[in-house]
Figure 1 (tube, rainbow, N blue to C red):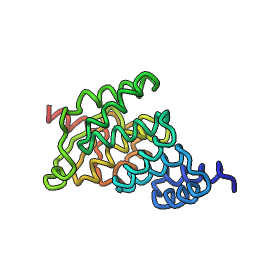
Figure 2: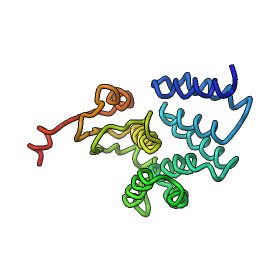
Figure 3: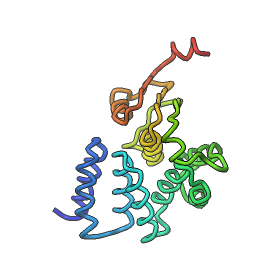
Figure 4: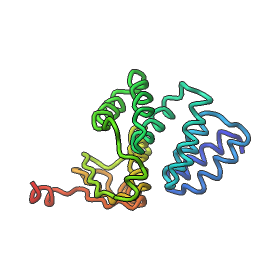
Length: 201
């Protein structure tokens, strides 16, 4: 099996929620060919599997090999910002705004607008978990949009910090396909939730 075939198989494992299998296969590939792209994919799988520390190291390694890896810059920037290291994370995200697509730019701009100047550190949040409510038009379609992959990474990192989370989607489009991916992270999914939103105002 070629490197590209193994890589495709690792991505298929990841998309199916088999994160450990994806990580193991990516580690074999990294021994053969330690590229920036493979380090980014390995770190993404580690984050989805709940290991933010390894994800941090993987994204940093990806950017050390190729500082122009925009996907790794976004992933690492989001991870840094969600763990309180905004001084390092925000410049990474701001640096890719000019080169990403319109949808991803809009998402990153909205994300940056809500990142505080000094975010709470991970050690603080681990001792005082929050109840986090996420509201979006639809559930993340991580197998279709790169921006949704990054949104799933944000959700995974918040869960890894111990926060209790509920994801409300205003539309139930493709709920049967994508709700299990979000629920696998330990997040409660409400999609669609028109009745609850009507009574809650």
